[in-house]
Amino acid sequence: MTSTQPHGGLGIVQGTALYIASVLGTGLLVLPGLAAEVAGPASVVSVLAVIVLAVPLAGTFAALAARYPDPGGVASYVRRALGPTAARATGYWFYFGVAAGFPVLAILGSEYLSAILHIDHAAVTLLVFAILVPPFVVNMLGVRVAGWVQFVLTGLLVAIVVFVVAAAFPAVEASRFEPFLPHGWAGVGTAVSLFVWAFAGWEVGTHISGEFRDPRRVIPLATGISLVVTGLAYLLLQIVTVGVLGQDAGAGAVPLLALAEAVAPGFGPTAVGAVAAIVVLGVMNSYLAAFGKLGASLAANGDLPRVLAPGAEAGGVPRRALLVTLAIALTYSTIALLTGGDLQTFILIHTSNMVSIYAAGMIAATLILPRFTAGWYMAVVAAVLSVGLLFLAGANLLPAALLALAAVAVTAWRRLRRGSRRSGGEGRRDAAPAESAVTVPPVGEKRPAPLTETRGRTSG
Image 1 (cartoon, helix red, strand yellow):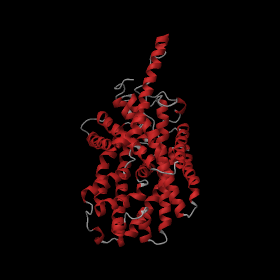
Image 2 (image 1 turned 30 degrees about the horizontal axis):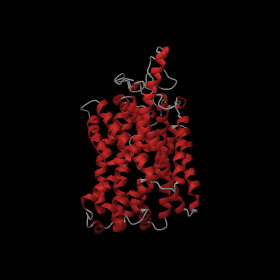
Image 3 (image 1 turned 30 degrees about the vertical axis):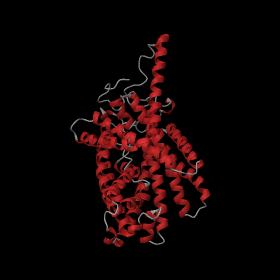
Image 4 (image 1 turned 120 degrees about the horizontal axis):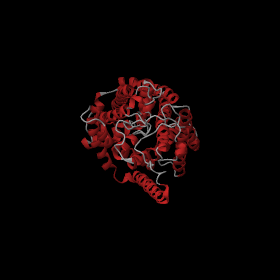
């Protein structure tokens, strides 16, 4: 049972900080203005709608992570329900596909800092790599250290958001909320799709679930607190953005800067610069904890070179997997800079893989969570919503499809290799299939792997 597995040292404070940072990301900088531009004052309704939609998704991930703490995260749940090939594809989607978001974060942060600090734009390239390195160094020290660093970063971020909202509320005017639906309900729908990006990130906690001292108690609590904090942050920012800036809310490229300037002249640029730096570093720090554990988990299952497996166990530091993640991030960032810094391609790669992960994870959740429980009902709702997002993604799913083909190719290659070995008289040595139904055997331990409640349900 999951209760017999070793756990790490993360408590409610560090865990909540990691959750908040993974959700309260770069959308904070631009989405309030973009949503106001397409939906007007009714963009407030779009935020409320997405908060409601986020509940079943976040709740399902919390139920899975609390019941089955495993560094493989969503891939481990897919392995239980849909088999090793689907699990490998899910792992590849996160490790190689979601990683396309690294240059987006680094370049956005660099652009903000260069503009606010009046640094020559030519220095953006150096800033990109300067921003990438610190979160990796912190995570090399272990997820517990990263959790305390995240607590500080998240505390600063929330403090600045509270300051901007508190300073702006006295300047809110009811007249700026009229007309309430200037672009009709279609505009609200567009704004909802924008804010779906803002409320992504709940899957991050599944990869570090084994690092919590008491996953069954801490993870649901951290998820609930994070839902309230992130929901309130986006809702209140949307209200003051519309109520203070009115029709000009979506006019500028940096709405948060315009809002800060309007309510705190002189302090605005400094506040936005701090927000940009904290958001970028915080999101990277929280995601890297997941990337490291997932990489080691994939290696432990043979889906990546096994040399990367150390650190998959609870409390372990997956330094080798983190170094590979750094190499992937540097490669993506170099390509982005060489192609002129156009981030649209990388955003599409990131989002298409995220949608694929959500769809696979929610379908798996409906199959492995106990039926007719609160978690199962949330999984059913989230699965329907995720499949709907999958259809909306359309042609943007090409990167995810290529990674899925890579996973299928690995399966075909393994079967071919096993077949050739058996025909050569090595059947006894290959009696145990390489694609085990065990999700992640802790490296260096003889304990049963996590997810043992229904072991053997999937075949290798």
